[in-house]
Image (cartoon, rainbow, N blue to C red):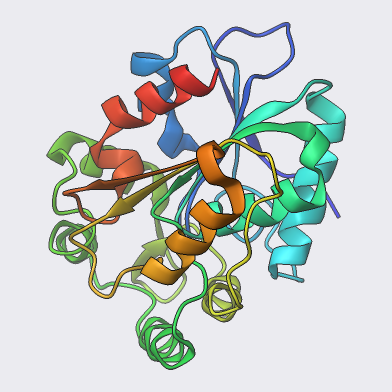
Length: 259
């Protein structure tokens, strides 16, 4: 399998400090603005996950395949442990990666993680996406984001994402630069039972309070505190789901503390 397409931010020529994982239907370039403004001295690896962006789209598409891809990336580019940050589905993958190679992770930051989702709800959302994965034109794609989880993201950030990530399709419509079957499969992965980070790993979770239903449950948060004790920090913020795009200041603050 060809290697992932990886975006590199910050100073080059030394070991990376951070591995940053985007969410479902996203891409690694979404971390660029935060990296430049908030942690310019940190070297960050931000891959396009399999089935997304400019990385290979071929299956398998499950969490286990993502872990294999990311372990290979860490072995090739990160000789020292990194701070691991993930948003949404990327946060779910991050927890599994930390469990698989705890020796390679020095701290974990989870931005509104999507895991342990209600299976019926995941089936409904996957079905809606499969039925309508594209748009007649770019304005409708933009409106879809602006009226949903991106409603508190600055307009210029949304416009930049549209420019980067929306592509013309063979059917004459436009859609995201993603593999649609991989995105549908991801909803099944997010309905897997949620797992906890490895014991002793400093973990910060941010939960967006405007999301309904919540992507992470109160029960999981209670289990996280019981499992990690003082090593767990949970923040609730008055935001929509796209915390990585709407709150670069908060994300930067958390990264600086972890680094």
